[in-house]
Image 1 (cartoon, rainbow, N blue to C red):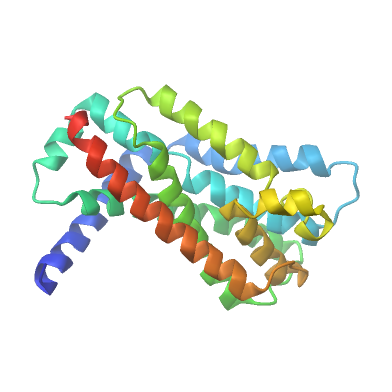
Image 2 (image 1 turned 60 degrees about the vertical axis):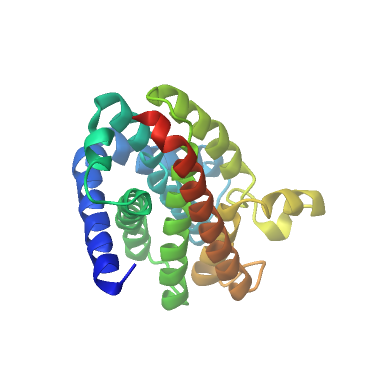
Length: 250
């Protein structure tokens, strides 16, 4: 593919992302699920424990980014299959990677924008960001990683969104509890750390603790490298699996 054709596909991916945000993301339930649910879940753990905002913010920020970036992306393909809009999209001069990239970019943008809200609130409450560049890079990698993970949930060629959302919830909720959000990695036993290391959310939470508490467990470069690796693996898997299942949707 030459540079001009590649540029055209990137532009089309941005159009698909804009369409996804307009149709699927700018909805009240998505914002509520992305912010209020993590807030109440975290408060149920924090109330009565005399925990400072510096301890709470890294975990809460990780939960908000994780839930918003994976809120709707698993359901986009099933919903478009059900509405018969996927056939029209695939008849356009776009490649499957362009469609996948557009869906990922929509989730990525939504996750970044929504996660800035609790970060701004935290700054207003007096927290400090000791490594702003590292935190910004970590949020970008994590949002892209979680968005690609959301696309993995939708590989099954079904138009039943409830099935896909149930599957994604069965994965997302355990991930939250094994990722060092409620108990920092430093305080976990060895077997707990071994489990936590299989979750990409673990590395962003640890990175956020570096940047907001200066108390991360792993080196910063390990957290960033792990997020980059997970993002690449999830994106490649999403492309490969959707190539197999997409023809069965139309």
